[in-house]
Image (cartoon, protein in one colour):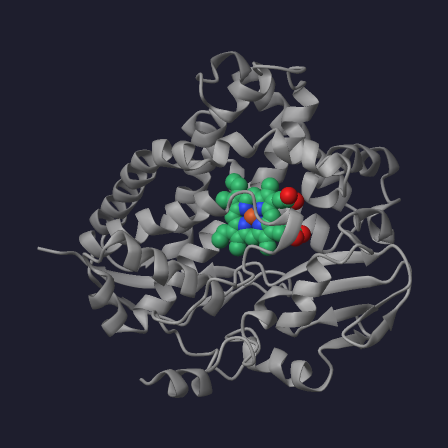
Length: 401
Ligand code: HEM
């Protein structure tokens, strides 16, 4: 099927939301949505402006009335942990908190982690092939791989890796829709479980792991258990589902494009890296990031008032045809250096080097182990607007002989 035919065949919003975004993008790149009571920012230039606007704050948690109340004690406990997530904090605290983890994502740290990622990807693929029949890429490969990598990075045992997706899902559900009466209780229970695991595993964290480095700093105060719980829960929330979906979305893109599969099998590291950048643009796993206006301001010609919620739509920006011509086409050769899949500005994704390396390792091992694969049913999408999230992706792998 051609690229145009493929886009036309995906009519529903969940299958492929980008043409739907472009309808609003053309008329009103900054548009007030009455239903959401929020501004939607969709054009590439307005998205970039929003992400470094001095009056748009990342501390939107306080403006979510539904996150207050209900079960007050548990809601307060969850808030005390989430309010130290540096993705939700502005300067001057933001750079200090961010600095505490940055060493885990240096080129050197990622190079050290890569053999583990390759080994784990190979193990998961071998187990999936040995089981026979279709595999669910999300449940059998992408989610366990991302969870294992985060556990390894933290310095926690692989038994903990099995729990990480559940905790990550609880946090995502809470922040997406906390209005349920049991949401704060469920989230507080997950945070307490993380706290218990941290206390239990802290003495065994290997030197060089993030937990070890945070509790044995070269200078400054060692992190407390509460600091660790906050950092771990943030990395889980920000890094697990996003990366497993990057892998799932990549398998989907490759399953539909035999030519691309052939080109990437045995490709150089540069070609694989280019394919991953285009994948990040073409199917953006974090579709939106929220902000709140701290003063009256103008964006894309619209007057925004202090306290207004602003939804910055990264996926829409990555499909703005004024920035990326023919945006619904996967083009390995396009210049994607300015895509915004990892955000932009001071909150640019701290885990981007890990996500890139993990995806490169996974696709290299996949195409070596099973150069051919095909969907056995349509993907199942989760119905959340903020992320491009696959619930299931059934695929039949044809192993190399
Ligand atoms: C921030 C996307 C993987 C940890 C962000 C932001 C985006 C993003 C868009 C900016 C948020 C904002 O401006 O409000 C992604 C995508 C990923 C990915 C698409 C995978 C494909 C990871 C991984 C980790 C991670 C693997 C860590 C294990 C973080 C953290 C922040 C962040 C801690 C907050 C940075 C800050 O506020 O300074 N990510 N991310 N992410 N990401 Fe990622």
